[in-house]
Length: 452
Image (cartoon, rainbow, N blue to C red; front, side, top):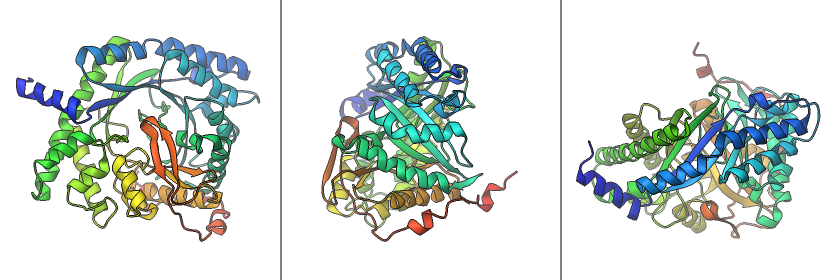
């Protein structure tokens, strides 16, 4: 039972601490849209998305108004399009991407995710056609997001896919060079991708999901930062308990919104993803949380330990609050989307190597990192391989969303605007991993995969 103090506290979190529902995402299965004719397939995709999601934005706005809770984004995720495109007899996959884009615009959503392929153990012809079309698809659409899963703990790492994705990222950057390589901000390479993630750019509607589902992503770095001010200088036990209690309150709000959206739309409730997803706004930063724990600057020694505590406490608080916590749930560390990360990277304290170490204990991985435009494809592939290895060995989701900014070098800045923010171009190692990447094949699954 909520009392007056609880209500006042929630109002304060919304008004002064950047608490919001980051996204309501409707997942939609498109498996029944497969058709040998690509044009007919595109038409079926457009029709089904518009039919299923036509009320999504209106319902989200109604809930936002009635409950006084900001809902920043309304989004759609769909079945990995490579699975749908496999039924097409030839044709251009970009036609399907354009159908997704038209449907997203018709429904009024911010983004649509699922221009995706799952190739952690090998490629089908549909997978190859879709992956090779990604650069054009992201350059010729506005709202479509893409992801490719190249590794799992059970299967190992598909190094042929790793090598291919390095080239795809470079081509995507080149085709969107007039926007600082913006296409790459809509492309994620995963290890151990989850099927119910509501956050872009990596959201897709997994094959284990139902016909349609509502997943909600909640965020509150500012709330956690504010709560930690009350325990400044206290032992880490108290820090962890404070984060856990704060995450509990945030998750309860997310579940309320998710259940209400589910009821009004007549679509099953899936999960609440409690991820501390930052924004470029001052006071809404994961980096500042870590600094509140006692670090002079995010990225200095001790940052990985602080992030490990934060990520674990967030998950524990969320699990106490809801029986359906899922997605990625934890702390995100996207450089361009976090005011504190941008400052730390700009000062040189936060480096790509340190970010890689932090991904061992955060929710996802190397996210929204700008690197020099002349970075070779093999170097990007090697960054992906390193991140995939962390995910594979630790049985966790990891990802890479890296932007080789065309024409820019270390010290320059890329500007994407909105939630995607801006980022300094960061240094990568110049020593070549080409001979390593050129080997191809598959890195075998680790011993811990043998759990049956």
